[in-house]
Image 1 (cartoon, rainbow, N blue to C red):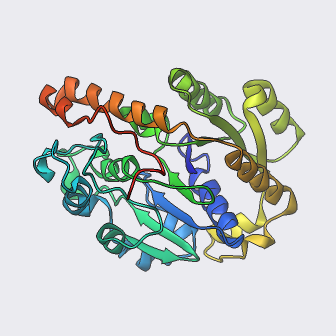
Image 2: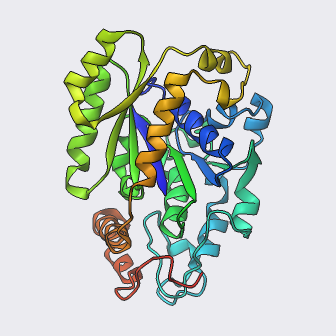
Length: 314
């Protein structure tokens, strides 16, 4: 399953995604996590030191390798330079499984607390006035477009804040999107915006409340988001300790908060992916990008007879 965490800036996306990733890993489940937030904090939230996080290899710095590897011998893609973030796989493309060994994972991912972790990379001074952050997130989008995951495997992405994910087709790459929502008008506003944009694309959007302190907070969220609210995390000494740099075992999280993580996992496990729609949406957004800015000739990269699925030979 592929899972995204989104929400207003400061709502606790990274906190929730790191807790969920740690919860899955503690259960002995295979987890691949990607930090695609412009503020790269997931490695530290999962227990890395600041020095280790700064030294982490990045997907953004390895875009050329990623393109060259994924294009394989697809006859529709003459060279790596012609690939863009939305280029879909076709016959001849190299597909990847999230826990295999390959040059991309060797270059871009490392193990941390039982989790295979990759990061898109910091937005640094050399990028100012030259690039948008999607130039880095595009590496993750390409990887997800070519990734075949199967039952019992979890791919979790901590996304950029707000509705910025809609700047590409990345928002359609997930089986469940958890929107982290504080009990505030502004945070609920981001939920409504996201729900509005996602409605026509079959996105499974689930709200998880955060920073809930009392019954009034719960009632506010229930009133504002209704049945979309799965559960919430209340004030947590465990989380505060982590924010002070003291990592604790996930089993020591407060029981009420562990219960919410359990509900999140159950929600994810209950989903079934429609592989045909998954491929169709990848093609749709590639064609949109080709028409809008990348060049209409890139529409020829689409292989109309190819559908990504576990049955395709990797």
